[in-house]
Amino acid sequence: MALELKNPHSVLAAIQTRPEDVFEIRVGTEAPSPAWNEVIEAAQASRVRITKLGKVARRDHRDREEKFERQTLISASVRERTDVSLEQLCADVSSRAGGRGLWLALDNLQDPHNVGAIFRTAAFFGVQGIVVTKDRSAPMNGTVYDVAAGGVEHIPFSIVPNLARAVTVAKESGLWVLGTSEHATEDVSQLDRGRPWLLIVGNEEKGMRRLTLEHCDSICCISPRGLVTSLNVSVATGIMIATITGK
Image (cartoon, one colour):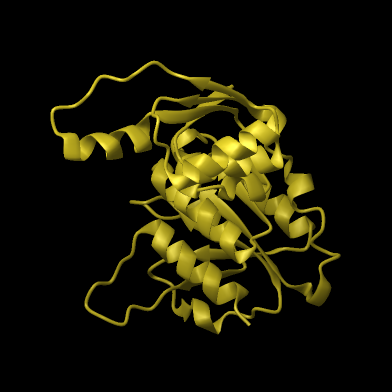
């Protein structure tokens, strides 16, 4: 299936990693932004088809027209990336130097913006792979790819119908399973970072499911320092990733 991507960074990453899956770049402005110009140059070098669209209708507010054209009138048709099996995702756990490493599992996250933000952060910190639940979860759509700004292209992921099986495979592969809950008594900073971990983050409103929590080796939280006691799931996940992967 082809996705329509509108973020130049997500499109450029796709061209750089799998140009054969970028079907077309559609250009509807004569003044692309510098980021889109880089995409167009990469597309030309990889012989990706570039289609120039006809002149677009002008807007009444001229001060907003240029921004509108640059941001929305260039897009790309890109084949969605193929996920891998759980076994492939966890294949190199035992061979990692120092016994460290971090994998993620997203337990029924429903907002594609959160999923995309987590993929972007995970790619920045070198997370090894991500497990995404299939049912009652945000699909891996164009919004995820665009918010990830290229992150989806650089991390293997597996879409699973049953997270419990994913946890079982993870443990058999040598991963320790870390749950997250605001009610946990252990702060993530106290975690043994010398182990390879599968970090599970839960739904935006309900958190992790009870049965999933029961299969965890440890459960941690981010202890609040101020009067606000909760965080957006993608922000919280970013803090945990940075803490666990830190030196």
